[in-house]
Every structure is written in C-alpha cells, then in structure tokens.
Length: 401
Image 1: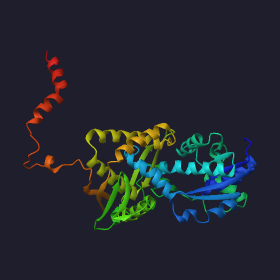
Image 2: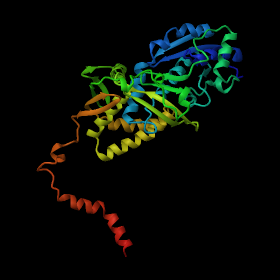
Image 3: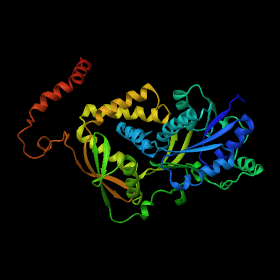
C-alpha cells in the first residue's frame, strides 16, 4: 500500500462506497474525506448522506451542488455537437463524470489531500472517465481504486464486511439492478437485462410512464433557443437546469425517452442497458430540427461528423483534452446560427417535431414551392447535373472504349 495521509473519496452512500471508507482506513491508515456531487439525482439519494459518511468512518463529508454547472457547462455544449453514442445513447452517465471528477479534485486540493479514490469496478467505463480527469487536473495526486485491489468480489462480501464492523447500510443482497441517475437521465443494468433475449419488465423503468399507459391526448411543448442555448420552455424563461427539469416532467408523463440497447464499453466488452432520458430526448430533437433550418448542406454534414467523433470523446472520458476543446469550438461556431422556436408533440412515447421557425432560416418557400415561382429557372438544372456527373460520364466513356 502506498503511503498516503488523506484521501478524498467519491462517495454515493451506496454499498460499495460505504465499504470503501473503512477499507481505506484499515489498509492505508489514513484520513478519509467523503465527497458527494449533487447532479440532480434527487433528494432521496442525498438524504442523510453526510451522517452515513461520518458513521462509516469519514472525517468530513462535502456535498457540492453541481446541477446548474452540469447542465450549462456539459450538457448544453454536448447538445450543440449533436452527439449520440452508437446512434442511440444520449450519454447521460458519460456527461456527468467530468463535472463530478473535477469537483472531487477541487475538494482534494482544498483540504490538502494527497490521494483520490473512486468506487468504479475494473469492468466499466467510469474508472477511465474519473482517472482521465484526475490525470488532466491533478497528476500529482495518488489514485486508489479499491475494486482493483481488494479481494471482495460480490455484494455478499461487502455486506459481510460492513456487518463485521457494525456499520449500518440500507443495501441488501437481493438488490437486482444497478442504477445511475442525474438530471439528464437514469440508467438501468443487471438483473434480467443481462440476458439480451429477455424483454425488460415493467419494474425496470422508474422515471417515465409506460407509453401504453400514457395519456390518449397528445401534448405540445415549445422550446426557444438563442445561439444554441435553450432559454425558454413554453414562453417561460428558465435556467439550464430548470428547463431540463420542466422538460423531464412533461415528457416523462408521455413515456418519452426510453431506450433498450447493447453498447460497446471502452474496455472491450458489450453491455446491455435501459436508459430513460425524457427531457433530453425532447431537447435534442428540437435542437437538431432547428439546425436543419439554419445550416446549409455542407455545414450540417460537418456538424454531424463533429457529433459522431464527440460521442466517442465523451463516452471514453476525454473531456479534458485538446481534441475535446477543438470539437466543442467547431460545434459552438455552428450553434451561433441556432436561434428560433420549435414545437414538439409528445404522444405515447414519441416526441415529434411539428413546427419550426427561425430568424436565421435558410428555408425559402419561394424556392421550395411545387407551385409556380419567379425565382428558380428549372432549365438551369441541366447544366448543373452535367457538371455534377461529369466524372461518372468520363469513366463510362472510357470503359466503353
């Protein structure tokens, strides 16, 4: 064991981190400071957290409110890139990790710690996301990952470990699912989901109404953007976090935002997860619909390329890198044109854009109409097509001898 004196642990109050506190004290003979981030996971998860941390052996517990920073500095920039990992995943867990890990480093520097610790397993993506942030922001600090060191391998082992030390926990050996929640989404893994042939049962979903049970009447919501930033929902001026909370409430009631996917983890294995992202689904649909009004073909194509690359940068935990900065700068330049209003219809699990308008719109009814017009001479298309297809014509003539 390395010689460290004070460790700041990313603490959730769950089974893993409750066991990590005494384990660190016993094996590293050091002071342990608990750090918890409020990224909008809900009051239920944060209730009593300070008391639980101290009871587990922590000397201090810092709970930092990151909700607005999370949405404003991480979610909104990601939306501007249009990033969707492997075509479906809206990166909810991925986006939260850099803001959490950054705040953890800040606490460590504030309290004079010489080490950082997380409860991520050696199988997942989060260990990479946390430790890449640590490396970028505080490479001088030692990193400790208990799941890669201790000999405990199951929930039963952790429960027994805590019972031997008379440390109370609300966890049990019968927990089925692994869940991660924040303002953007909630993820579900484990249990029957480990069999990809098993349809998710109703007990999987916790954030959204079953689309089959959603209201029979659709609801419409209007989103207003200014230079890529969502500023109003149904005409009401809201902060980034407040706007997301409102959209979550409205969209969840209609069963919007559910996906069931098998994804490629960074460490090489595939995993299956169910995700609920109601407000985020509406927000991203609206943003992309507005983009189609204001970006020309070449610009939109390049923005799509940024989104594809950025989805992997974000998923792989490379937020604090030069590549991340470059991609965000490119997306931001396109976002300057994304101003206007979008109406989204919510109905039985679907979010459908029905109305669009923008002062920067490139759409012209005069040019696009199927009726008579005075601005477009259709004869001009012949010369354009001949030049556009000239290389194909030359190749065909050559092949014909």
